[in-house]
Length: 302
Image 1: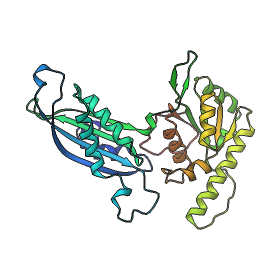
Image 2: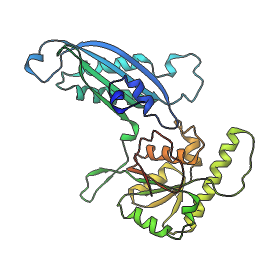
Image 3: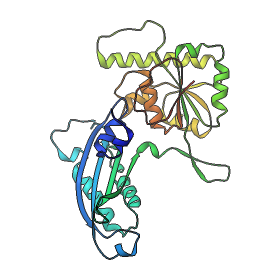
Image 4: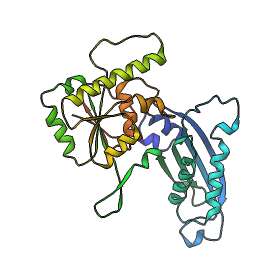
């Protein structure tokens, strides 16, 4: 059985696979990359090189155009090794933690990179390897807005999923009150309605039909409470978050326009994708629905 303890000492490739979402991404791996560097906070480490071993895994979005076997269309291994070399040549650092953060930041600056695992180990500080490992993703750069004193503050919304029974429940207003009382922007999501819908027999067009059906259900929820405003674009979502509004997500435009869009057609998986995209504080589930494993956002059930 896989355990957290065992995963803590495996290669980042395995940790990336174990924590993948319901729509796992492609991964690029750098293993056992050893360089020499002058690094360390202790006096005996200064002025002398020591070996560092790097293991890096970058999760990447699929390229929107055919690769045509062209290295310029991918995030290549060289870009990862160049990120390491660039940070080591930039300045002398005391901490592996600082180096790992800087390497992760460079890798995530690549357009295709979505999440990165960086493990760095010192090989010459004792009989074993001493090191750190971090995980960083684009979702960790959330939207921000000025607080009452003008300082920029990160915004982490609550993303809540309502099944059809919760939408028509008599206590809907009470549930929405409870969400608002937490003092965060609220994004409501819904699934498919309990109504017949066209079956096209063609996966791309069926996806559009299903997304439009979800949007019909979003309007059903909005009709039950005046606080619920249906929005479709990232601009509308960002505005609502900055202004502390409660909104209902109409997914078609955002999902179909996204370069790194979700591959799953399941409504709960779509809602989880939105939660990650907006760096949500929590994903709150109202109703008896299955939540895909590997969520990168904490899940609460009501």
